[in-house]
Image (tube, rainbow, N blue to C red; front, side, top):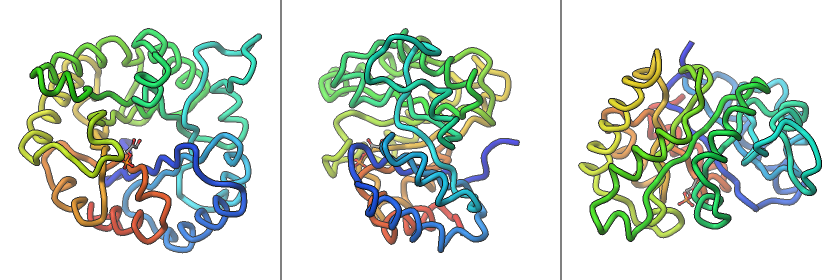
Amino acid sequence: MPLARPVVLGNWKMNGLRADGLALAGRLEARAAHLSGTVGIFPPATLLAAVAQRLSRSRILVGGQDCHTAESGAFTGSVSAAMLADAGARAVIVGHSERRQGLGETDEQVHAKATQALLAGLTVVLCIGETEAEYLAGERNEVLARQLAGSLPDGATPETLVVAYEPVWAIGTGRTPSLEEIEETHAGLRRHLAGRLAGGDEVALLYGGSVKPDNAADIMAIKDVDGALVGGASLDADSFWSIYAAGGGT
Ligand code: 13P
């Protein structure tokens, strides 16, 4: 079954020590007794096992923020998809711009990571997005098409794939594209996915980049926006939950 809508995922990035992470997970669990949609959190790797254990009786999905391109081996400091699954993860983010831009990850590497994730039984949250320079040059659609073509894993289904459109210039800046731009972009992504994958029209398409309680309802009301990938606002249980509620989640 495709993921229940809205799909609201919280990427904690490199934030949270054990006490804060467990407290935040506990506050979310208390609200998530009956979820109509899908709520997921992506703590740092050091907290994954503890948070997954804390939420083991909850419907909140717990995931990793990245995995390696290889199944195992001599890769000091890296974490494999199977290790994330072993620690209790059910999903993993790949292709986030903080890794594509910040660490020079290529579409080919993102594709390899997504493939490992599927092999390990994880749901892939595949991030794509243009930089500000690409946006200003009018290259957004072309960049997104290239990233999707190069990094979408083969054999993904609406149960195992989520695609998140995150314009790099909107992340952590308080700026977002206009609602019309998001609508047009998501319609293009939907067409691409429908042409590429069986069930592509049912893959959850999320918007990410400065989603806050006060803009979440307008963004998630857009056709082909099935939810949100939230950074900063996911570190506060009230803000994160009001974003989920703004998308119609109970
Ligand atoms: P912000 O919500 O802090 O802009 O971050 C978005 C993001 O990068 C989620 O992956």
